[in-house]
Image (cartoon, rainbow, N blue to C red; front, side, top):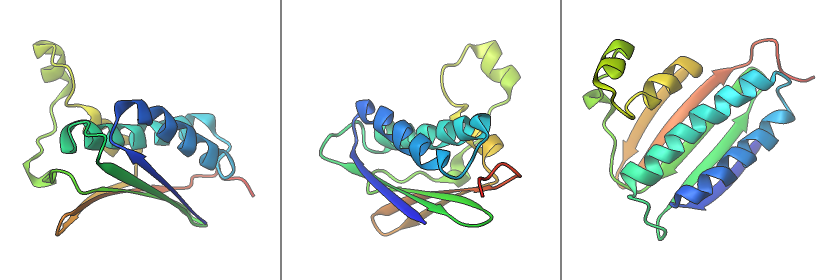
Length: 141
């Protein structure tokens, strides 16, 4: 089963994304904690694309595709904004974040803890973040 949502790059659209993901996941996952974690992970990636890749430019869009399979869920989030190079990302330590009182910078670390696999693909002008989450025993029959 596939679901798709396209939104303009405005921070106010994050609410729409969270609602869309929650609604779609409730049909397949009965563990609210697992749903909330996946919503948080997708929200974090979308926020990064809206803010850092597209600079909140309301003329730009991001596309979210949710694919539900028997063994799990895949989220593909794509845009045509500034490319994010995962190879240049250095995950901060929690201690470092606390000591420097740094705001931000831990979102991707959180996404990696929640999801089973996180990929970034850049082809020509299109950037795609692919998030995979395997079902535990919490899917609905």
